[in-house]
Image 1 (cartoon, rainbow, N blue to C red):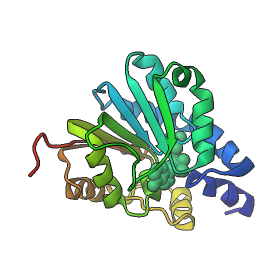
Image 2: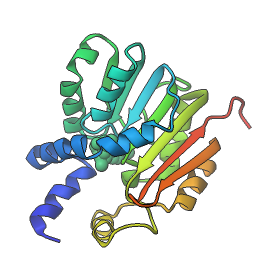
Image 3: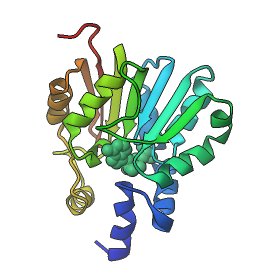
Length: 212
Ligand SMILES: C[S@@+](CC[C@H](N)C(=O)[O-])C[C@H]1O[C@@H](n2cnc3c(N)ncnc32)[C@H](O)[C@@H]1O
């Protein structure tokens, strides 16, 4: 893999600088179909959080689709938060969207504060995926829905994706592993969908109404 390409790709984990800006633009465009597919699995509530929002294109879609929803997005990259703020300027100014520098497993939101939490292409990079999922469970309201969608899935990756995963030390779970960690984190009603041709996976799960 060429060094220049690798330097660019590293910004998927933490976008920064000029290459980060380039990567953000690429992800905003390149993740659009995957995001739509993920969203097609969710019945959105009114308070929605995007974890690892990157450049904010997914939130921009929801701002159009759900003009009355309260939208929040967070990312650990200052450049990502800035970029998301820029493309969602109107919704932010109108008080319908809030973006902040924050991430799992230390989400800067109160317990039980969202009806829907989703994450597109971010879980690979969390230092501890189960701890991240538990933190999402914490901020979800009882009965709330979590969804994540990934295009690099263990056991069904192109050689190119295998190489990227290795170089970036990414955690690319198999569908079974993803189901197991979501269950282990405390979610219920777990539902998994795969597009084997595209190599995509989407999981949805709920926070129990009552503590076990
Ligand atoms: C591949 S990008 C995907 C961005 C966006 N969701 C999209 O689909 O275009 C992964 C994003 O996850 C963010 N990220 C990595 N670790 C994170 C964490 N622990 N909490 C929140 N965001 C994180 C990165 O900064 C990066 O913006």
